[in-house]
Each structure stands twice: as C-alpha cells, then as structure tokens.
Image 1 (cartoon, rainbow, N blue to C red):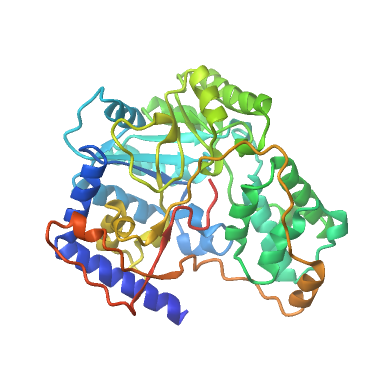
Image 2 (cartoon, helix red, strand yellow):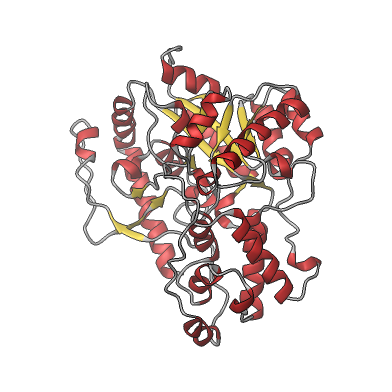
Length: 438
C-alpha cells in the first residue's frame, strides 16, 4: 500500500510540473507534429458506474469509471482545446476529406454494458457530446454475461473459498489461467487478459462450465453486475444521434478463429444492428484490441469504414482507418496524490505526456491468425497445491508498476524546456491495457 501511494504521489507531482511549467503543451505540440498537423485522440471506456468504490469490490477494475470522473474527462478535454468529435469526423480528417481546426477527441464504448445507458448516456446528451458504442449483438436483449466477467467472478469465488480445482476434469489450458492467479504471480484481471488472447472461446466456456460444476452450481456463481443493454435502449440512444458499431456476435477474439467464423461474427453483427436499429453500421471494434490482415479484408469487403484497436499510440493523418489507435481509460488514470481526482494528471494522460517520456508501453494488436493455440504452460499442479495452502485473495486494484523515467525524447518536444527527473524517483507506468479486457 505504501509503495502504491508513493508511486501515485510521484506521478501526480510529475504531472503537476509538466502542466504548470508549460511542458505539457510543448509535448502536445510535439505529438501534433508527429501526427501530421492534428492529433486524433480516440478514448475507450467500458462501464460508467455510479459507485466506483462499491463496484470495485466485485468487477474487473480496468473496466470501471465513475459517472463523475467520466463527466470531468469530457470537461477537461473541452477545456484543453479538443473538439469533441464523432468517429466519422476522425476518419474524414485522417483521410484528408476534412480539415480540423482543433485536435479531435472521440468517445467510444465497448461491449454495450447497461451502465453506459444508465450513467454515460445522460451525461453525453446533456453536454452534446457524440459517441459510438460497439455492440456484441448476441448479448443484447439477453441476461447473459460476458465470458471475461463470468470467469473473473468464478476466479474470485475460487480464491475466496480457497478452493482447489481438479484440473483432470478441466480443459488442458486451465492451469495456465488459474496457476498464476492462485500462486499470486498475477492478478485475476491481468491473467484473464493474457489468457483470452491465447485461447479461443470454446476453451473459455469449457473452463467456465468446469468451474461452475466443481463449485457446486447455483445462482451466486453468475455475476449480478455486467448486464447489457436491450434493443429498446439502443434505439433510444440512436434516436438521440448516438452511433453504434459492430463488436462481433459473441465478443469473440477473431484472431483465434477460422475465416468462416470471422466472416460470420463480423457480417451478422453488422446486419443485426442494422435490422434492429435501422441505421447503417460502418465501424467495428476488435475484441481485446487484436486484429489481423484477414479481419481487415473482411471489414473492407463488407462496407465498413473503420476498425478500432486498443493500441495506445498516436493516430496519424493519412494512417490506416482499419487500425485506429485508442487510449483505454478507467478511474485510476485520473487519481492524484491523495487518491482524489487530478485535473493535471488527466490532461497529461490526454496529451500523452507519459508516452513521450517513454513511461508507457503500448501493446500492439496486429496478430497473425492462430487457429490452434499451443499450450505453453510450465505451471505444475503440484506447485499450485503447495501454494494454495497459504493462498489469499489477490488485490486486483493496484495495476501499476514502478519504472524509471529517463527518456531523452522529451527534449525534442519541449522547444528548449527541460524536464529533469531524478534517477531514483519511480513513476507509475501506463500500459495500453491496464488490467482490462476489450
């Protein structure tokens, strides 16, 4: 806990210096020049909740942001000089079809959680901010929960009960997922993020079914939270001008699926939204942010204009609209020295100050198609059994790790200003996917 507070304090102090010294604006100018004259910042959210602290106790942390912090993000972006724009505006500026007078700030939501309808939609409507929500259509109008939410909930149940899974009756890769969690080497959400990128949906559902059976079944094994919108709610938002894009049928990581599955998940998700809502669907979000050349081909062949990743990198004028970069945001990206909201930290995030300093480590999303993932686990069941005897629930809130900021890149972007960071000061890194799933 003390280490987390110190890292937060150091980072907040650095943000304050960058902001009040004017270096932040110089960094923004540097990013602007890198991007071809205009920055196109696309931000990604998942769940906007009324009680962040309460929800944190039962949900994947990196998916959450409070309604108040979300509102302040929009206010900060506007005050920082961004134009709050649509995804279509961003694509047009990148393609040279439109000239932007300001840098663009585009709001996106993945997964269609009902929290977005309850808590984000009223804020967006009141402030007149456009946004797009990417829908995994097989979940809309159902009471189903996403595999990542179900697995996260089951993993917490396993931890809390100090339960020892019987791996002999589970899919082979199960030990890869549970091993790092139950031995304390990874948090549940970090392990899930890695695992989902390596294994197809059928493996995830197999693990879910096995764990539910071993834990005795019951309604308490299905998470109460994480419900999704229904079509009436989607249609109401659409009538108010909000856009919707496709996000597969079943929230499927398509780099792990054959071409026929890729085509079905993309085309039918698009067709379902168009049929139910009466709008043309032009935009797509890659599940987990991972994409391939084959997926891009299918998008182009079926009339899409864009695909968004979760690569935390600058979008460049003239860049590929099917590999749009996004900054994934959640509550803790705006927490200051005392754990309260920090305006200076938030605008430093938007201006990618920590990226210029070399303190962030974007995860690239472009992947080859992998149809038969190899089980590369070196975790032994015997090691797990020994560790489980003393296992306790893992703290899933602290998702940052200390790094040393010493990158000379900042000198190029500050027009003579100097940033001096003592070599013994550790600042928290910003990963592209901070313990969350797309």
